[in-house]
Length: 92
Image 1 (cartoon, rainbow, N blue to C red):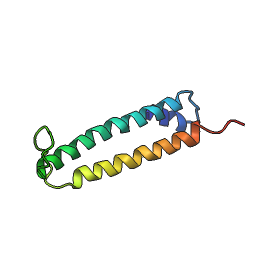
Image 2 (cartoon, rainbow, N blue to C red; image 1 turned 90 degrees about the vertical axis):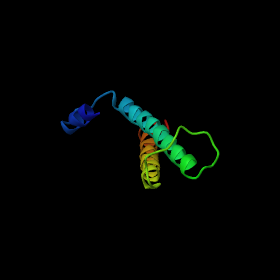
Image 3 (tube, rainbow, N blue to C red; image 1 turned 60 degrees about the horizontal axis):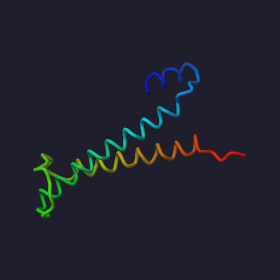
Image 4 (cartoon, helix red, strand yellow; image 1 turned 135 degrees about the horizontal axis):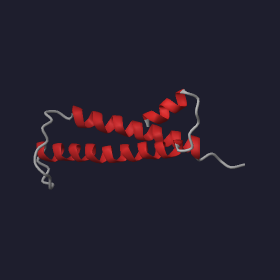
């Protein structure tokens, strides 16, 4: 990814730009999976919801998990919008 930025800064167009965007989207989806798991584990343990979980999360408040969910969800949304606007243009 940083090599792509380096090449772009030099004015060189690369053919694999779309693949970098797809990899970023996959990265955010995987990251969201971990953040949602942390949020779920924290809530089920802290609030004793009777749902299965894998122990306690070390977070003392919901601030960390909620911040992670909001941040990564917004990044994912922005990358999806960028992908759609850049690579899925209507063919005339």
